[in-house]
Length: 162
Image (cartoon, rainbow, N blue to C red; front, side, top):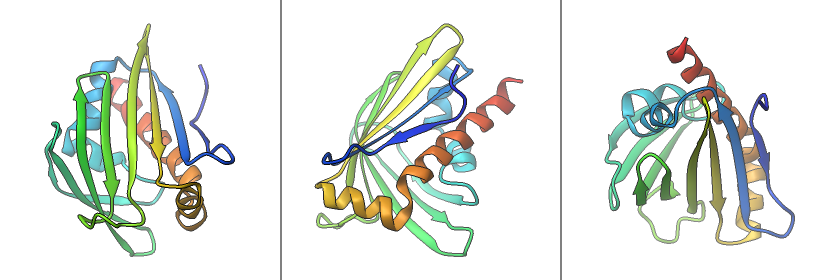
């Protein structure tokens, strides 16, 4: 099994794809992604913590949270769930606010594919433009941040299944 997460941002395309295989059944992986008491403990790059204000995982539901950076900076986040297919797929729009013109808004499809005792998690993020994608890669370190997030997830779930 591949160790660690991978992330790509193909040149000329407005996407980022982050993937990671974890040694856990898909139902458990799904719960760790959809239950606020769990996702708050691993979501985000290394050194970040989270305050979950609300999490309603259903089409039309919202996940409102603040990511606290290691430097003390707070980042407001809003996820609007578009599609929820337990335990296979989450589709959502991710932004920093309700503003329709939020320049950091992007669309995400997360898939959970089980094979034997592992589950592959793939996050496919689509941005409004290549320039918008490049900006989050440059300004927020989105590629490394995505890998660190899924690595933190894998470590969290590994501790649960031991």
